[in-house]
Image (cartoon, rainbow, N blue to C red; front, side):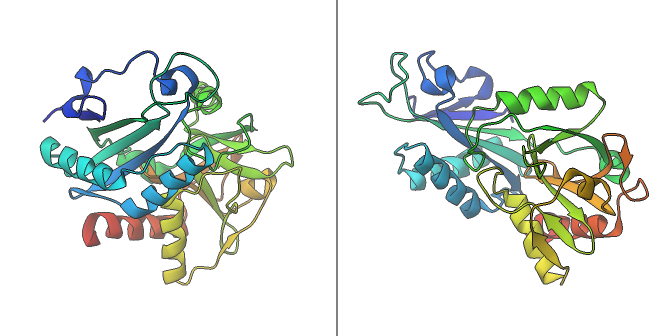
Amino acid sequence: MPDLAYINHDQQIVELTEARLPVWDRGFLFADSVYEVIRVYKGKAFRYEDHMERLKHSLKEIRLDFAVFHELEVIIKELIKQSGYTDAKIYIQITRGIAPRNHAFPEKTEPTLLVTIEKAKSLPESVVERGVKIISSEDIRWSRCDVKTTALLPNVLKKQLALEQGAYEVVFIGPDNKVRECSHCNIFMYRDGLVTPPESQHILSGITRKVILEIAERLKIKSLQVDFGLEDLKSASEVFVTGSLSEIVPVVEIDDSVVGNGRPGPITKLLIEEYRKITREQY
């Protein structure tokens, strides 16, 4: 089946390549919009309620009134059904709507809802088994990274920089020299326990991050949400990054420093195994 899209102004599901939006949509003109990406396993949206809670937070913070969440759930289920995909990714974007270009909020406009479904593309297993390199870079993003907006140009530029340096990802370092997150992933290290930066306005509250912390608690793996520096990260015995689409990716090199013994560590492997049990077997 083809990838599909739904736009509320048209009230119909079409092939993704046929979907159209007006050029005056504020999501296009100003990135005046928020979004979510949800992984589908076995034909079901994974941690759907968690994603909706985060979406509601983003909408509230940009003062965008959108209340038709029941309809959104119906649309997502229909997209999954019509696509026939059992392993997929759902993309949701809500913009402030269509209006002549003006920085101020338009007085009367209906939000635009775009929902797409595409077949999931997992990382090659060889990449997960081998691990990846990441680089560090100053955080040039805005100060409300807890809001999942489509204003991602800083992330795009830094991700491209990482690729040009032969790396998988970039980890952002704040002006206080503290580790924050990556361009599209949260980050963890293992140093006498699992450690990840605390929730704040400088990081996105990742859904996979949340699941990992739940798994750690169940397995009685000590975990901390505390600030730490780049040198702490480089001297950790294990490092990995997490995201809804990439899941858990071991990091074996940061800049020119080898992490641990240069191979994915036992805690990372255990968490990958447990995460896959939840998403592939139990879910």
